[in-house]
Image (cartoon, rainbow, N blue to C red; front, side, top):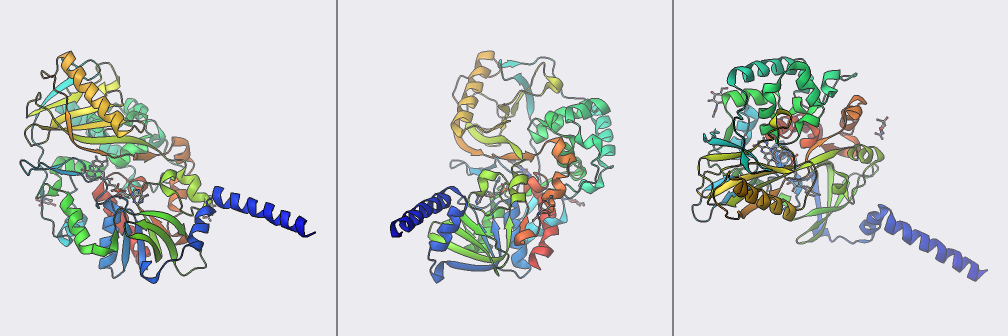
Length: 472
Ligand SMILES: Cc1cc2nc3c(=O)[nH]c(=O)nc-3n(C[C@H](O)[C@H](O)[C@H](O)COP(=O)(O)OP(=O)(O)OC[C@H]3O[C@@H](n4cnc5c(N)ncnc54)[C@H](O)[C@@H]3O)c2cc1C
Ligand SMILES: *[C@@H]1O[C@H](CO)[C@@H](O)[C@H](O)[C@H]1NC(C)=O
Ligand SMILES: *[C@@H]1O[C@H](CO)[C@@H](O)[C@H](O)[C@H]1NC(C)=O
């Protein structure tokens, strides 16, 4: 009898151990068994995951609304896609990530709060050399659409944007979703003959917009953006956008946990707090907060240890994304005022075939050039660097660039995952209604580019609308 019971218990324990290891509850096991010392328990009104554009904005605004906050950021700086390289020789700062902001009061109010002076963003006029990067040969006779054709196509585009005012602050779509928004953008362009816009839109978005449902192009190439293209964007007066995030960090101080990541979350509705286990450089901490704001890209692999609901998992699992890389290279073979632009000589609307370098353009610091690289899928940093070097070699072989120098990488950052989207069928099926229905459930709110648009100014606007409920 005793041995049978023992064997059963042993078998049971074995099963239990297997479960604890294989199921997400492995994290539950860890959190129950780990003893947090009182000094390692952080109690706040709001815990914010991700200290990029929207996470930092949320933290500052909620603080100013009288709430206590804590931010968990995996990198050792705030700012997300913001990258600034300061040349040690010339001290010239080069923003090779986020550059410009909309001329909106939400932006100037935020900059005022952070004590960051701003100015009109000026883009140096450069000469453009259109090259097929596959061959390294200059594409003779290529010219972007003329001004008249561009203006006419832009008018048509604006008249379409004006039909969908509900897209101005997020994916607030009606049911049924208008058919034009679901068309692959390629088909929309043909249907409405806005060919003259395609190249500029691509230059702005830098990803393969032709395959996207038109909805995403409308979200990105929106009325507010067009107004700023026509009237001028803002940027920091120092031309060092990292100032925004340094100043924010100086205000938030110890309420930011840098180089830290979430190990587990527990949003059990019977508890007074959302609990978040965090690994930090000074050891493991337990955050208990009344509300949770998640700003990290909603890719399932980014949520290891989170107690996602079935709805959260199934919605986030539908997203796909592209990849994008920015870098500054030292190279002596390209004139200081020249942009070398990748053109597909025989592709629809001359868009280059990705993955590839999009353009090589002057950084404003002699000898240094900014290189943008776009890929439909994720690549390792080394693979991207190797591809860039190979394309520079091709530019030399083909004759577009005189010097055979190998580019030297002085700065590099991966902005991957970039541009979250779901297929037209999912959009038609109410994906964004279901996604937005997550807001406020399990005391959790979501913001960030996947929830609106890859544009800091407009994301601050989107985030602002959530704050009253988060602060309530
Ligand atoms: C190269 C580039 C240039 C751009 N230029 C402009 C521009 O000029 N103007 C403009 O308005 N917009 C620009 N954008 C778009 C804009 O920067 C983004 O839309 C904006 O940064 C998105 O904000 P976010 O809060 O969603 O994400 P992010 O700013 O990316 O913030 C997310 C943060 O979460 C952190 N994180 C990720 N995973 C975890 C994790 N598991 N745990 C903890 N932390 C995590 C990240 O390190 C990051 O700091 C640009 C984007 C790119 C890629
Ligand atoms: C921002 O727009 C306002 C008009 O709304 C204008 O007066 C101002 O000059 C613009 N600012 C910059 C720096 O471009
Ligand atoms: C999950 O999603 C379904 C379908 O959208 C919805 O009916 C249900 O209420 C959601 N469940 C929760 C707990 O939010």
